[in-house]
Length: 423
Image 1 (cartoon, rainbow, N blue to C red):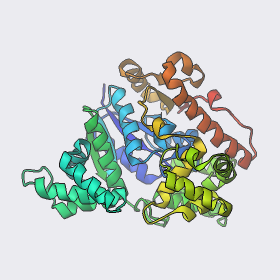
Image 2 (tube, rainbow, N blue to C red):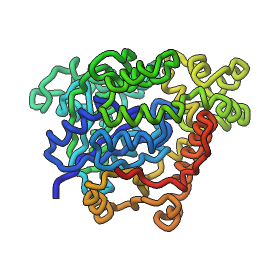
Image 3 (cartoon, one colour):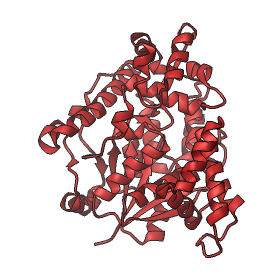
Image 4 (spheres, rainbow, N blue to C red):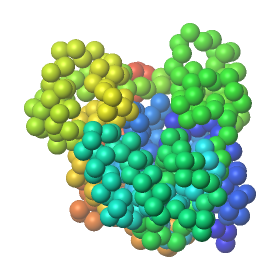
């Protein structure tokens, strides 16, 4: 039976760049199947996904994926390190995945792994430099980059697998997909996993590029265009045919005829309620929320207008908008730092292609963690100490569904009643 390539994604939403990655992943690894670990209804940048996890699963299957599994909410909403750690743990625990394929701006797996090895081992010299630069007031990304520079200058040699210079290697840390790829490699290294990382040079628009007119627009550009209420139906059809594979575009157009896209602004009142409910000390218990940030939240609460406006108001030179947004999302969803430290003990099937049924049998036969196909049976399938994590997934899905149903004027459907998408 053919091998399995894993892809970690959000598909927020799915576009041609994603289908290109799936196709290229099969070509490079010579594996038969592509298995996707995908975020649920809330994503790593600290916001709800524009479409729910079942709609995005269908897009992924239409775009060439063989099966989609859910990355639990604790890790899907975490920083790049926790996001990568959680997804890599699942892929490794499945016991049958041969490769992890990800996109990067560099396309150079040796250089990404070179950096990942240092960050995974955290040599004493590196740790000392990192602490020194943090004490000097640098943000964590800046301090880590400087500490890495010091370490590489002392230990980088011509015998390195990488063929680029130290300045070129350090510049890899300035690009979002490179950074995430480094975190994937770091996570696999710490797990001592047999999964081989493979990278594909990112094609089309940059990760944060907002222009939707290029041949492969970014998810950011596509979200922005989908939320533009001024466009006509014909304009929307043209956009989708330009940005998504034909089958996914047809599904998205049909979806939009009955369902409104969801944004962080739809959760503004719910967030404000949570902020008013707790003291600064209580807020500081949530992931990514320092006591200083919690006190600033309380000082500025009278200026709260919306989710995004408040995140912008709280942003500082040391704390980016995304970091603040993620902190606010953790408050909204009641996710603590202790939650992120948990070990993943299950994975949930969101959808698969009928022709890929042998892949599901391999997962069931090889996985060291339960693969949940029917949510209502979770207490029979997973250990009691994992119930809380799974129930958090259900809460997140039901919260999202509540907002989506209200916005689209559709009946609410509990996540416990949902079945995997089958094509």
